[in-house]
Length: 256
Image (cartoon, rainbow, N blue to C red; front, top):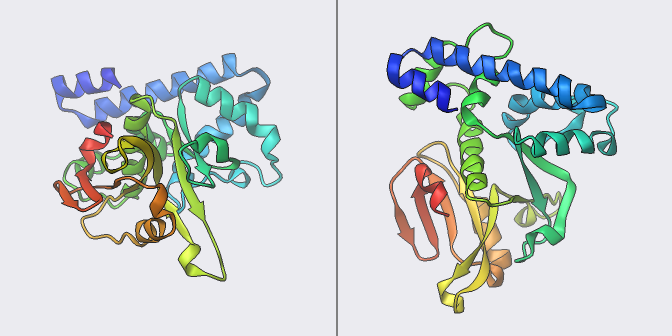
């Protein structure tokens, strides 16, 4: 948020920044009450659950977290309202990774990111009057005990949406065959040099730590090799190129 950034540049005070962000979140809540009409309750319920849902390993949004008896069709308009208001970025599961990713959307399987990662930090501590200063310092010095993967993946989603990309991921589970169980954080379509610049799928994994595995990426390449171009790992390290696998610093997500 520009106001929060400008204040930090001038005062270097995390407390003031957090106060500004919480004020913005309150304005969001007020606007939901004014403009979401009959969906206000559902919209507020979804918005409040975003940090908890993103802190899970799979990060997919589960309506039962809002209401145990919830049905997806009852909440469709609430998600549409949040996305249309640009408060969230929805990432949908594309069940068959072909160039037309939108043709294979599973509307019941999606992740719900906040449109602003800075606000996500404050929203994660909504039950406290302020977000502790040490949380912000730990983010700066890479010592965060909070689920850092939640923030990093949200920031990547924010960069992709700023570039105009619609968000897709891939998830498949098979209890009888582990080789078919995989989850890819993001899928994008890019022109591929080795296919005469024809579009190909590029799978993207996001890593928040310097030590990590890429088993899902390996399985995905093995199963769908003919459909793929370059594959990317966004990580807190420098650029590495190993054949079709390109590892980029997290801040370079906007280049994709």
